Length: 474
Ligand code: ARG
Image (cartoon, rainbow, N blue to C red; front, side, top):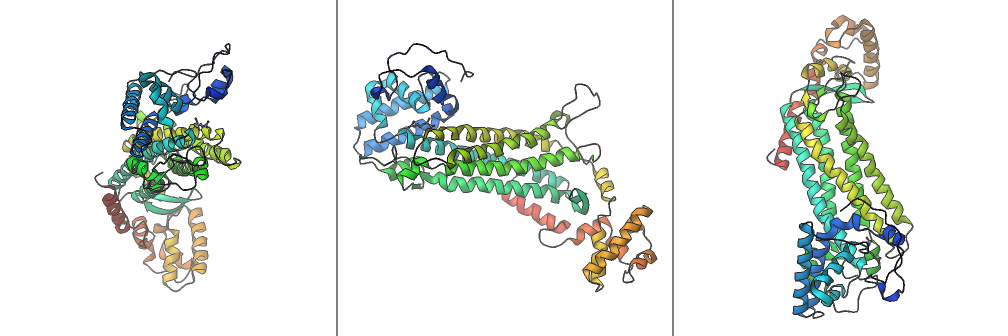
């Protein structure tokens, strides 16, 4: 499609629209340009043709069209698709949307019989069908891309399965965890995103809207179940009014996209943070970093920052469509045309983001020394000392308080917990046993988190195995 052009107003010509019967004047070119959606819905063309092919097949089966008519129309539809695929399908300012474009071109190719394609159908149910068909492909594609992302994360986790890093709450050092555990945490969020897309794919995207016609159904003896079977839909929608007004499936897609954007953004934020000089936990490949135009020393994580930034637009897309829909009376209103702008934008953002994030993760390096160094700061194993007292029968609150005082002292003395002599420990609580010195070691602390879902190496190993089984060959 060429870039948006400003069309100059020109003198009214004879009506040239498919719906022109009721009109004696041609539309003002500004109104025509304003209402046109071809630039946006151009990509729906394959879906539009697939829908029309099935519709015509059904019309022939129900004897609403003759077989000869149906075959002629179907041949013409395939020719239009071929032109589109070859980049040879021309469009005119009067092509209001992709549906009108197809019909206009069909007419040019096969003559007046083209007019029969729209029997027992309205653009209102047609566009709902096209949109669903498009989203069926898009959800499958994006679910696949999310799977690749999970595989990238799993590969990284396998590679660093026994490396330790600080875990954070409030962005303050909390407890040591395995790097693999941290990576699997992000992986799980993306697994939920993938599942949400499949739920949509197998949920509302299995309900065929075609056959609701403009809003009330049709007087022609159509067979909606037959069309559903042809197009691979499990069910047909019920109420015709709801069918042409319903965009829940688009909302569901946008909400899944926005939630996924939250996860992408959080991962990106950690990549930015952890690649900073202050952390230096990770190094991003030069191929996914950019320089500064003034500061020669810089290598900036712009790709990660843009993932974080661009995901905001996913929120915007969802809020836009919610706002478009909330005040609409039943049934079809032209406002609904705005739905595709935001759904396509969200799909494109997710697609391009997943495309760049996978190789960025594949080329990322962890800095083992820095990770362990960071673990030795901030007393991340203090909870172990409290748990040690609890095992001696001390109530947890009392243990917490004693270790808190001990940490204050150790922090001022600038001495790590493992290096504090036992007498010192006992000065803060007499129940401390010699074993505490081993228990506050980093590896011991990690190994102790054996509860289901915890960061102990055997738990993480089992989690890795589960993921490998679920994700297949990585
Ligand atoms: N371009 C329109 C849309 O995307 C198609 C349906 C138009 N229907 C109508 N009655 N004007 O919503």
